[in-house]
Image (tube, rainbow, N blue to C red; front, side, top):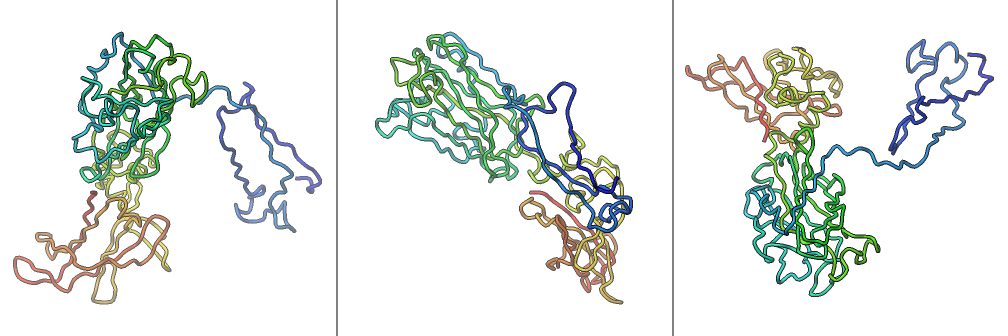
Length: 420
C-alpha cells in the first residue's frame, strides 16, 4: 500500500491467447483488500476510511466465438437405400401410443392429413402412409401447419411421479423422392414438470441423395442418461433445406411441398427412482453412481442418503450432533432430538425440508414405551425455527400410548421418511 495515490491496471490472460471459449457471462467477486483484521473489518492499511476499493472500469476483450461449445450428446444419423430400411428400429418406448408412460400428445395437423395423420407420429407402425405424418414447408391447405412445427409428448407422472430417466431419443423418417426423409429438428426436455430446456438442434441428412432413403437418427449421452426426471419431450421440426430461406422451398426439395415425412418418434428410458429435488441435492453433494442412490450410506454413519437429504445433513460426513436453533433461526442441521417443553413434558424435534411437499417427502413421527410397539403421532408438527432450506419442527410426546401391557407413557421416538 502506498497511501492510495495510485491507480492499478490488472490483467488476466492465458499464454494460448484465449482465456476461455464460448463465454456467455463474466462475474467478479470483490473481496476486502486488507482482511488482516477480518474479512468484513477495515484493515489497518485503510484506517480512517470505510475501506474497500474504487473501481474505474471493468473490461473484457475478445471476439465472437466461431466454434460452438462441444455438445455432451452423441448424434448419429444412419441412412438406408429404400424408404423402409430403418423401420426395423420401431420398438416399445415412452412415447408410443397406448403405453402407460404417455399421458398426452400435442401436435399440429400436417399436410395431406387424410393420408398422413398425426397419429402416425407414435403409433408403433410404419407399414403404410396412414402410419406416417407429413409436415411440409409450403402447404397451408385444409388447416395444415407448415414447418416449423412443435410436437410435445407429456409423460404420465400419475404412473411415476418422479418422471423418467431418458437414455436415448430417436426419429425415424423416409420417403421415396424429393428428400422428404431429411430432417432438421430441435430437442427440448422438461424435467420435474419444469420449463422445457434445449438439448440441441440436429440434422440427419448432410448430403442430398435424391430422397430415396430412410433415416434413423439417435441422440444419446456417454453417461447413459440424457436427462433424469423427464416429464415432457418436445420436438421442433424446422425446414430441412433452408438454402432459399427458412420459410421457402429448398433446392433439394423442388417439385414437392418440401418438408419431412416422419415414420415414428421414440424416447427410451426407465422410471426415475428419486425426485428431481433429491437428484439435484445429490449432485451438489458430489454423490454419483451407487453412492448417489437414496438407500446408500456413503459416509457409513447409519443414515441413508434419503434421511440425510430429509434432515439436511451432510451425506459425506459422519455426525451425531442434533439440530440446533435459536430465536426462530435454525443454527445447525443435525439429527432429531428430544427436548423438554417443561419439567414433565417432552417434544420430538427434527429438521424438515421446507420444500418437503414438492419434493415428495413424508415424515412419520412414532412413539414407543419399550421399543416393541410403535404408535404414529396424530399431532401436526409445529415450526420452531427456519433457515433457507430447513424448518425445525416439534411434535409433543403423547401422555400415553397403547402397549401390550396397557396404556403407558412413551419414552422413545423415531422419525420415518419416505419418498413418493
